[in-house]
Every structure is written in C-alpha cells, then in structure tokens.
Length: 100
Image (cartoon, rainbow, N blue to C red; front, side):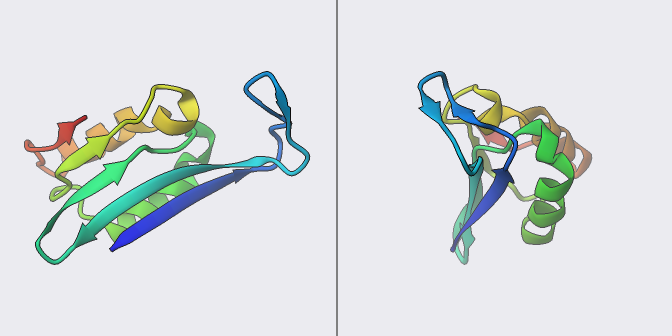
C-alpha cells in the first residue's frame, strides 16, 4: 500500500519565483508499506505542518520498523521534517533506518 500525506499551504502565493498561486499548494509525502514490504517514507513535509503531519504518520507507521527514508531533494517542503523523523526512529530503537 502507498499512502500520500499532504499539507495544504493556503498562505503561500508563489511557487519558486515564477508561478503565482491563487489557492496555495500542497506538500506531499508518501509512505509505502504492506505485507512483505519494508516500510519506506518518501520525503517529509514543511516544518510548519509538523503537528498535523506526525499525528497522521504516527498512526500509520511504526518508527521502530521504518526501513528507508528517501529525500528527493533538500528544499524545506520535502525535507523540513527529516531530522524529526530520524529522532523518532532513534527513540523507537531503530538502528536500521537507511536515508537515501
């Protein structure tokens, strides 16, 4: 199963420099898991959505079993909560989390 996590930002009015946004944007993160599949989290979210993001993510995945964290790039909308994920994994006793 793949689960998408979206954080809707109504306040952001530009995408990068060129694109005006009238209705905000979303920050997308994906959790891949299922029978026989090692759990993989692709990207995180913007730090301003930490409470919402982790409320949903903690209900979906055991941080002690999370195997992979894929960071597609280091802009804050994709990597803003990477340090928090690493901390939660460590607190859950996860020594096997691989960051790609």
